[in-house]
View (cartoon, rainbow, N blue to C red):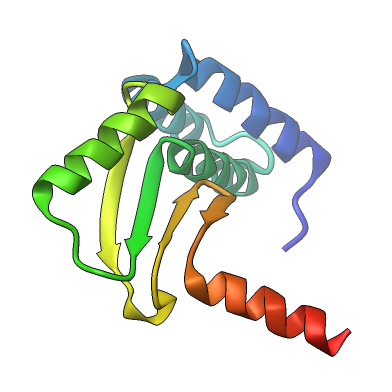
Length: 132
């Protein structure tokens, strides 16, 4: 669905109002949605959909998904989380997943950024280089 320029502009403005010190203020987000739903301005559904997407992307920037080929102990998870928080901010949350298809190593996804040091990624890169 194509979103109008007006709806995108309003959604961006709402996102700016929602961010306080680079963090999402959930109370402000609720107030904005309630106000828009009550007022029902032009293109309000498209505006709210665009705003929802922007909020989701913003929240994903503060949540890391850590995949590892082997099961990690709690101490290892705590150490990895502490290291990530030291580099990326104290408000970072993490989810740890066991992915045996990685063969070895680790993959960290934060928003749209992925750091992949897995054996599978290296083998895929090698196979692609050999095909070229």
